[in-house]
Amino acid sequence: MGLLDRVKQNQTAPPAGPSGNGPATATLPGATTYTPQPAPVAQPAAPAPAPSLSQRSVGAELTPAFTAAKVQIHAKLIEKFADEIDSSNKAGVREKIVELAEEYFRATAMTMTKNDKERLVESVLDDVLGLGPLEALLADPNITEIMANHPKQIYVEKSGEPILSSVTFESERQMRQVIDRIVSLVGRRVDESTPICDARLKDGSRVNVVIPPIALKGPALTIRKFAKEKWGPADIVNRFHSSSPEIMMFLRSCVRARLNILVSGGTGSGKTTLLNILSSFIPENERLITCEDAAELQLQQPHWIQLESRPPNVEGKGAVSIRELVKSCLRMRPDRIIVGECRGGEALDMLQAMNTGHDGSMSTLHANNPKEALVRLETLVLQAGQDLPSRAIKETIGSAIHLIVQQSRLRGGIRRIVSVAEITGIKDGDIQFQELFQFKQVGVNAEGKAVGYHTGTGAIPMRMEHLRAEGEDVSEKLFTPINQPSPDKLY
Ligand SMILES: Nc1ncnc2c1ncn2[C@@H]1O[C@H](COP(=O)(O)OP(=O)(O)OP(=O)(O)O)[C@@H](O)[C@H]1O
Ligand SMILES: [Mg+2]
Image 1 (tube, protein in one colour):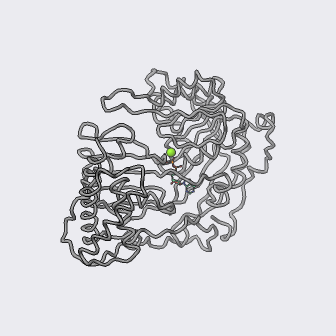
Image 2 (image 1 turned 180 degrees about the vertical axis):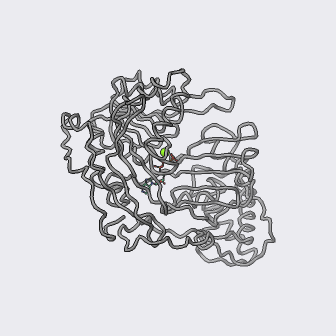
Image 3 (image 1 turned 60 degrees about the horizontal axis):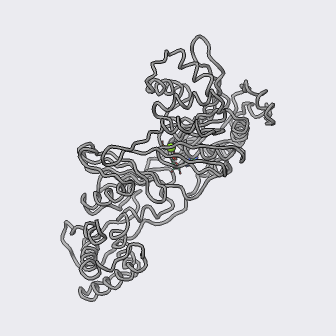
């Protein structure tokens, strides 16, 4: 499809409502910085009533006048300049749109504030070259997730909480065009026969698309934005209070001493973020291979090979599963393997790799607590279809995994490491573990956010000797239980 066709295809549909001539008043969502929640809270009291969605909504409505102006300017752009539009020259295209916008204002005697004029130009530009209304949300650094439930309802996650945005698509047609543009970036298309697609934007953001007939209310689009700011252990400890310094010190020692670690957690609880942070503790000289469905890990080490699975192409061919990646990477002489997320038969290949000389490997998994993580792992191994007896599976898990770090998204959107559990072996056919650290939630603050503190449980890791033999100076004091701190020290 030529650029002219694409520009035409992306032409904004005329507004549904009457197109008045009043000034457009829409403004972009205001930018506020992502502020970590202040830790100390006076009273762990009952939660304040959550503000209603309308109170919390961000962004602004598209007025009919604004939309009408967009349609006209877009149409003129095609009429006058279609042959000259060069998609690699954004500044040049913008200039042409500005020129046409001025012409439009003169012809219609319409007035608009300078800000709104700029917004109009950007909006036409987004439609011509970009992802339409999503561009503004993608550009807002405070938004971490975009969830379009249907064309007229887009939620965004800001500071850990979902908020209804007043940015909307103009029509289902426009939303479908944006979706088509996104999925075509990965050489795919969505239609009735393949209504689900995972894709990735140029900047690395992860996208999931589901369209009718699977999605009943119209197309649904979810984007996990690629974090431009890379967080380190200090951010997790001091800024977000997701971990205590003691837990982070212990995890650092465990990574360096090559324990196999599983990060468990619910969806969006911060598993991948924590895996990234744990991987930063791996010494520089090791050869690392990452296997992911959508490449999200950003390792710092130079000796790193990054593999990404592939969905089938439009003819249904060429798929490469994460399981195939894990198998193949064993032939690439890795020191450690990092599997972005275990969600199928690759669990078995990863456990076997952990058991056969790739100590220090890591992965994430969806589960709500360490016990569930072990059960889920068993289920995933069964999906590998090797017909292994339950006992053999448990033994494989029991000897492969050393540590489970449980991450949770608590009340108010805060993320915490809520448990660190050490696998201690198999007894009576069951995998045994002991909890070393936990997060004790003691209440909810005035902003409706969970508050509590991290503490050791008093249990001493059975791998203390191993850690020390590996040169890790782990003090037993780290594991001492603490009394509940005063309210100002809770977080
Ligand atoms: N410790 C943290 N404190 C605050 N926000 C966090 C923390 N960890 C992650 N986040 C935010 O939570 C969101 C989800 O993070 P992440 O992708 O790591 O979660 P996940 O559990 O891997 O999600 P999924 O289940 O979708 O793979 C991101 O927007 C990220 O910025
Ligand atoms: Mg993840």
